[in-house]
Amino acid sequence: MENTKDKIAVKIDNVSFSYGKGADAVKNFSLEIKNGKFTTLLGPSGCGKTTLLRLIAGFLEPTSGSIFIDDKNQRGIEPNKRQVGMVFQDYALFPHMSVEGNIQYAARFSKQKFSKKEQSEMILEIAKSLNIDSLLSRRPAELSGGQQQRAALARALILKPKVLLMDEPLSSLDAKLRERVREELKEIQQQLKITTIYVTHDQDEALSLSDEIAVLRNGELLQKGSPHEIYFSPSSAFTADFVGRANFLTNEKNESIMVRPEWFSLSQKESADITGVIKSTLFLGNRTRLIIENSASSEQNITADIPTLEAQNLQKGQDVFLKIIHKCTI
Image (cartoon, rainbow, N blue to C red):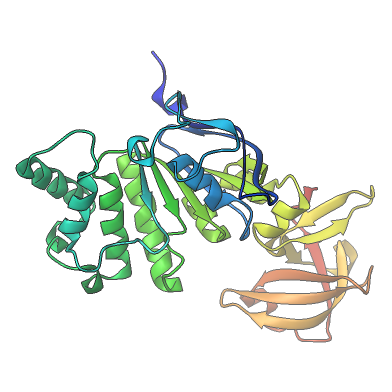
């Protein structure tokens, strides 16, 4: 019997796409997404991640290559028949409708026809699972950002799609709310065990939410891996620098290495890997960021994040000695 955890829910097979006669927005892109996993497409603006999401949803057709959902080629299949649900960047809730009305609107597009009673039961069931059953009579303007997201999720999930697509759904929220909603979203996805493909340019979102991350650049896949693999073992300088801060140094073998700011510790001069002069300090609460002029190369600045209790007496212009506690060869 096939293990559903190892089953491929979505397969993107050598897909390319271009808008008109311009350069390819997606180039020979291949990716397999396992059933029930939370996979994030991560990259800067214009890298092709939203285009990929629209290709999966059926709003666009590949110029070449194929997209499979549950082993079925999706070419020519209309968006409302692809068994996918989508949450848009601005949630796209109808302002004149209640939460119940917004969810009910999506139910109209089901291939299977439901009675009003059946629709009401379905809406109540999904609303309870998302803890918004007490909000069904409210309109979007009467909801918090987190509640709006849950309403948009309910609308996307009402038809029990096989795949949930999310296009930067947290980008309009303030930092504090975004962090809280991020935690809720992860909990909901794990509870429902639905295959989720999430688009963002926010590294913190990708690292905290994902089972797997696919890093994109110029329409191409640079690296796929777990958040831990992407952060600690990036395969390129671009990935290292995009997913968190990075210092690029050369070791004794003349190899290029990457050291994150938090991978330094203060040391004594005789055991130091890096010697430098502090150019500036930045208080970050539990850590203090040091910008250091590297004595080995005066043109290179090094960024080091040191626990504040250890760095509180350090000042601009002072000599500092650093030990590398972790590094990655690039």
